[in-house]
Image (cartoon, rainbow, N blue to C red):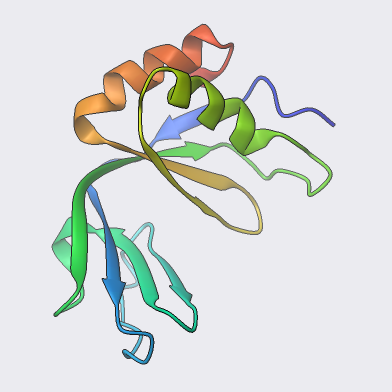
Length: 128
């Protein structure tokens, strides 16, 4: 099953990508927080969250906007991230991605959001 074309929604607000020590406690997020992602490895605890909820003492990269791939996507669907990241890489737009059971989320810096949406549209994707 091919990934193209995809429909993406631009989530409201700005996000931060944060790094904490691997043994840091996982931050509690409000039940009203519409998106956050937490990943722990042996090397780090990574958190993607709204800028107004950055964990204390976190190294942070701010100013990200989120494009949500409208899902759910089936696990047999291939090339989802490639169909998005390839054109953006060709346009020199940096990305950060996060995936869930149902779908993928693509983050671009706020200053490149308009260009990213245009590039993805030119490659057949639908931006809502």
